[in-house]
Amino acid sequence: MSLKTAITDIMTRVREIEEVKFVHVFNNQFEYMEQQQSYSFPFPCVFVEILNPAAFAQLGGGYQQADLDIRIHIGMEQYDSGDGNMEQNLDIFDLRDLVFQKLSLYKPTMCSELFKVAEEQDYQHSNVYHYLMDFKTCFIDKTASTLIEPTLVDPVTLELQVTRENTDGSLEPGIFISEIITD
Image (tube, rainbow, N blue to C red; front, side, top):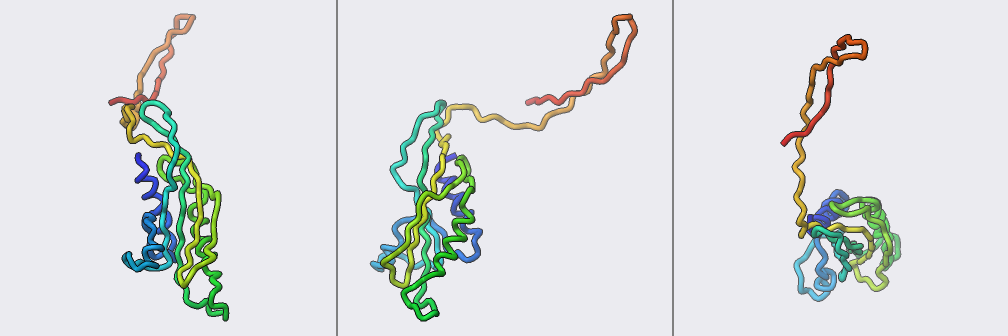
């Protein structure tokens, strides 16, 4: 499984949050939006970024391991909070809580559980609030694996009727049942 699978798993998990209207891989969309150099996207939105560089260690057989830092970008558009504090956006924290709850301890494919290591508020926002949350996970990359993938098959029940000869010469019938795996 590749890194693409882990990223896709995270995005699929975030899409389960009803309040989030758009989920994508991060490509500096907020900056491009401010410069009017990008497509528009609906809010609230979440973007997923793998922070690079990630140091990989060789495990053997083509398997590699890395501790990945995953940054979640949460975007919310709000022109007025409606409580008389135009520049104050407290709704972003509700969205932050939903994303944190959905991703905390989640295990993407070939990863350990995600755990939050940092978060950052947006202190210079316009009507778009950009909140950051960083998670860490251990990722196993088996893309270059040279190991043969096992083929899993259902076991077959083997039943043998046996007769055991006791020390006194008498015979004792019995049944031996075992599950075996065949190709």
